[in-house]
Length: 376
Image (cartoon, rainbow, N blue to C red; front, top):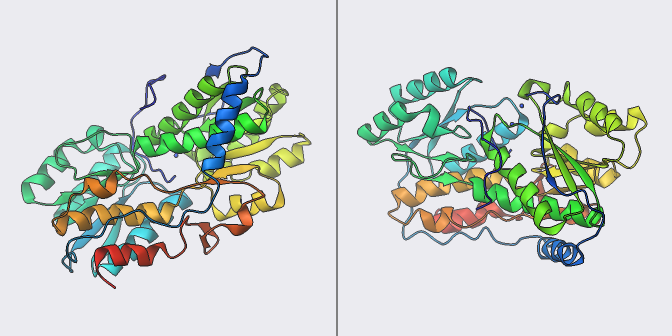
């Protein structure tokens, strides 16, 4: 695990996939020296080379038997960002493949609203509740205990929580984010020839994205002592509104910074247009979890690179964890396998596995899940 460097703020929030103002700049990682660490630069190049080709497998072992049909699955949807809807769509499709009934409840933007949403889910007495993207250990302690008492399965995804009593599994938790943070760091280091300065724009109200930032910083510190990283916290309400101007203002104050890093593709909404309009030159936009807009921007050259995060596959993985539970299989045998991903650049973007313009990593991943679940 990447060592903790900053206190993580715990509130509700999604992955996949995310807020306070850019005026708050955090501590720096990396050094101010000019000597390039050639061994570190080569290590970053090697890591990129290992994560460039298209994945071909979801990596899930087959279940011993088909999971029972007719389960009622409720997702608590906490974020208005597009990536949250992609997660919901993926979980709905996966539930349908198992002949399960899937619905969502809007969990709002505060812990109190999320608790009310969980209690509304409990009132429906479902088989499964997923407080997706919410730090359950801090928010839902009483509700999880009640679900356990009633025999309701609770599963979560894209949160930084460790094992929690009463929660079946945490899919795509902090270790997954650490892999993508390292991949984005390698792209920055290689692209800047081991001497770059990066500004990270992220939402520390979402602890899972803090895991990405910490992993990015740790890899830069390890491989590139001549590089530097500055952290800039954003608010969820700033995404697509104030964030583009915040990024431009930062770059104008720091003309030597040519790399901007985003913990989620939706965070970069409007940034490339704002940078172009400002007249700034040589700015690179990189990050993880690209949307279809980010992929198109890579094709056009207005954004540089993204670590592909298969959001919809992560949603199917969440359903898979519950399917394994109901089929009597070991849940960890699926949850412990990292999601596939790769670095996406202008050289590779045209050959990606995409559906409806979104990165999915593996062509036909749904059929691989159906095969593993013995549902045809």
